[in-house]
Image (cartoon, rainbow, N blue to C red; front, side, top):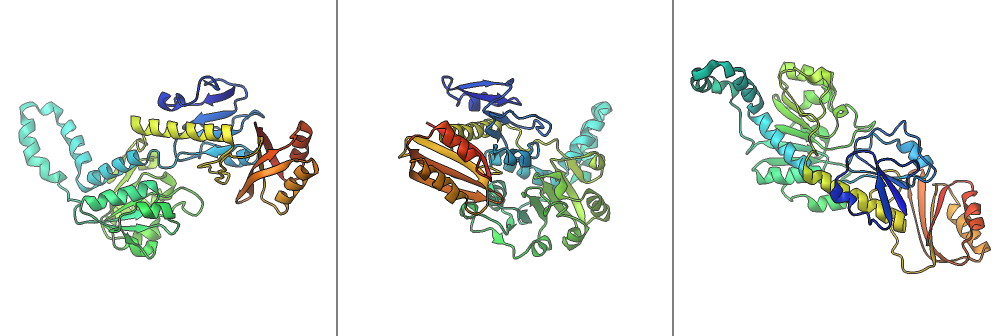
Length: 389
């Protein structure tokens, strides 16, 4: 019986995918086999020795201590693309909010609630103060063409915009999803100088932190509108406020507001609603659960953020041996030699690496005793050993 701990309210549509005869799901476990989490901050948590996997029902994993998980052989999953449509829709809505001063207009109308019969005439008199422009015919720059960025780009094309995309690391799968009408930017700086709208869809890491700053703002058209539903740290807030004051940026819509941005003219702060739809939460939960099940039951890894993706169909062997190790020379030789010394035959195997980590799936026949497992665990560089019957 596998024990699954939930640290947030996880959609029952996903949790129902755990078969009741093989899984026990609860919010309180002292030493679960796996954890399914959304936004709960796990950095100060103590992990039991039985913990094998953590699945984040969402894309960002800032709330999970990845380095510690890697050292302890805990595979961390996320659910890329499961909430993509929800985020895409609110990004499109934000473009309309940035184009037309709907946000300011609604706030003003609410402010005249005490004017009684004067309201209709006041609305007609003052509506010109909130006029805007149409997005059709304007140029959108999309930074990052993953699942969300590609969907935004394609729908913006359908809405009559010209779209320029920038992503030096675009995957083959993502490229297949992209409309042929999306223009490829030769560089970020070139793209910034050509667009009327910018939307950001890249992860926050050291090389992307403050990627939009005073230097980049200076390259943009006057009055550019920026939409950020990726992460707050991608934009330098102090430089942004200066750009808003000068008119270089006319509107900034963000799903990651902080105190320094509130009350600033030209900023539309949204309380992190990008993936907050019933459908998105269900999709993320289903994807997270299926990945945990696949890993616990077969050892296959799909959509891990710390270990390599590694999948081997099970067609031979009495047992399946799963080994996580440091990505150092001679590890495969050490493992296979030890198995051979104990008369254990390898029917099939796969080895994948990612950065400092490697992962092996080995289907074997023979007496895979606890002594052999202990011997493998004691090999220098091996992080964890697990056996599935």
